[in-house]
Length: 364
View 1 (tube, rainbow, N blue to C red):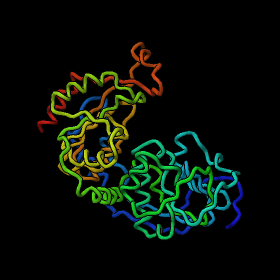
View 2: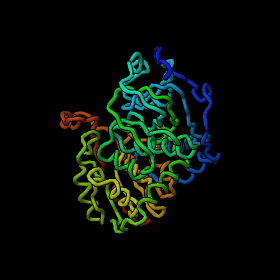
View 3: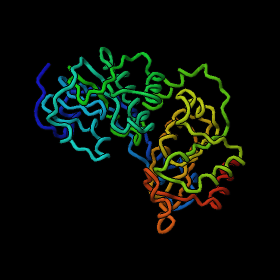
View 4: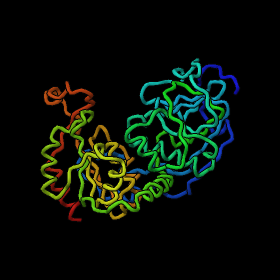
């Protein structure tokens, strides 16, 4: 194995520096299509500007291979033997305050043969990033053939993370480690690791088909209407969620907390539902499994809204509706909740405005 040395630095255009296999998405007029499709499907205020804009979903996903690689399994970061960090593998870690310099000058704790790296840092704790950035990357490597002869390298996968990989890729050999850094004979990765969640292409459809195919015999008896509750999380605290849940229960919704369910049950729950409602968050990434006949209704605080779920629903073929509401709380009301552990912000849904709009959507 080649000696690994040198300071870490970005490779700004890694696909141009190294030869790569390319998984090319068919060019399509996604921008115009998604904007037209969204028209008339939003309510509340202030409505985000992205509802009138389409994302750039052209081009493809690059699948990269590099020899004599350094890999930090907990972060999904890959560097070449000069210590140069690949941008698409560190992208998620950057959002948490890490830099390329944090992955320099460290001795390998373990040596490994050919490896496939697929889980970015956010996939450690975020279901959406695990599913839509991580597993799509494994899908890309499977489709381009670079998985052959490699083990899928990651940190230790427990709970829902292990269940998801077992469900989606039971045939892929895995190497899970607690080593901080691994020296791999070679490493493969896909640039979908870097926030594919925000630019979902056809890979999500093929991942969806792969996972739903494993549940072909799972009973189809889920509730028709589900509300994805966040009451156990203080991160983005909806202060009147209990009142919202009572109103929804009266409208035939079952209140669910997907994180309390085995992964197979989660997938089946979203597969069978005809109306899926919830505040924006990782739990709604399960909309990947929604039926084309389903309607996904997303509640979006004005300070925390993005087009990712709209775009995912467009890709899957189910309907999407969005309700925008002012956030966060300010002044004395915000202070009342400020000591909650893990709190990022608190917000309130204006039920007198939202519920009549919801009734219109349910009757549409």
